[in-house]
Length: 381
Image (tube, rainbow, N blue to C red):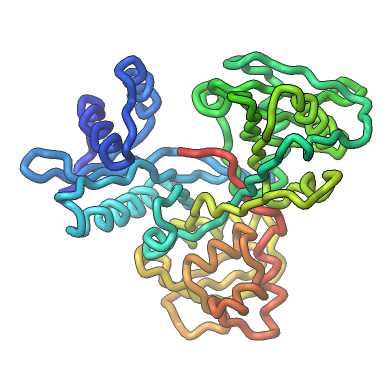
């Protein structure tokens, strides 16, 4: 039976996480960890009064372009080895989907230990990042810029960070809406911050980074303008006397790598977070109005985990009607539909992968369901 863990059981939950994910939280940090998880709903399955498996459900919000949607974050999914292969994780995933639907969380995200494993439950990769590895000879500044860089000490919280990040997030699908507590507790802990100000004094870009053992690691590189991009890169290059190498975590659509003096650098693409639409009907009822969908379109969704999504949906301009699943002109499963909405894949790409059936007449209508914004995610939970 699935139960909701109370705060007094969080120590038992943390011990399961430590065992499953092979880390140790020092005693002096455990109180802070419990404080961070106060907003989580933790579901568990017990055997003989011992916690056998558990899952954290976190209430969050994400951006789809300029619009904000409620999202349920799945985290801390773990089972002790002696209790594995008994279907406990499947029970917890099914339970969390139902709870998210009841609570109005139309979207969900998670960081997978195995992409294939979570695809079985309807999640699909929506965000990747590029890891760029540079050596000293690559740190060549670009053209001079008119702005200035201001560096902030660790654990500080310049107000400009929020406005830069929020403007950047509106240009993408899937980025987290960061609260002030999220910024303080997760995004800037133990990192230096550099903010670029243009010649009018406006903050238009930032990066967070650390320098250790002659290596610079840039965790977030967020330019809003071309001048900010150049200014932040040149600031990185100014560390050439301190470091022998640099590592940058970049948005896959970031143009900086091709701008370098020698673009032949080591660049790796890493699939990162996964997403799924929890409740297609209620998601669409809001979504089609916000994108002002001007067409009539009929399609069927297949969802092997969330049975309430197994329906035929008829979009008539900004209205949504739902009926029993029939043979519709367009059919796709929940993973492909999520990828389409988030802008991960175009209808043409889904066709090439064999994940979409659509007639030529409806093809351009289906294309307009995606906002054309690139999916990205910089956070972790």
